[in-house]
Length: 109
Image 1 (cartoon, rainbow, N blue to C red):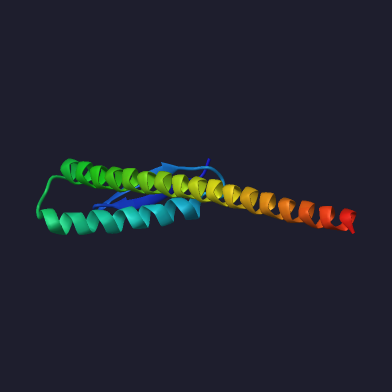
Image 2: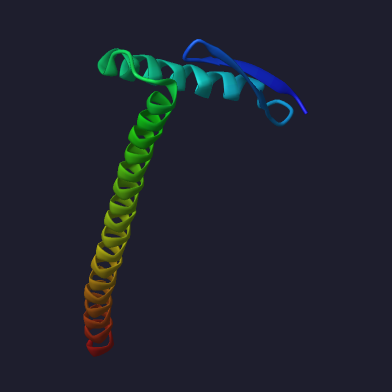
């Protein structure tokens, strides 16, 4: 199993990952490191455990917000699909009525 060494808050951590996932782990670690550095600047001289906890809380909050937005977007898509289905059914009924009227005129002629 491959191991990737990532740097967070001045310390190296060896992280095991699946084969081929090394680049992704490094990419995610770089984003985490950037976030932690920004938070560290905001907090000043905070203890490492506190820095990790605050970073985790902020990321969890962002994740929850994104999940909520995704849920709302999915609901909007479902509503839009139902609206299209109703419009399609109405249009088909109208067309069927026209076709029936044309057929009746042709039979009468």
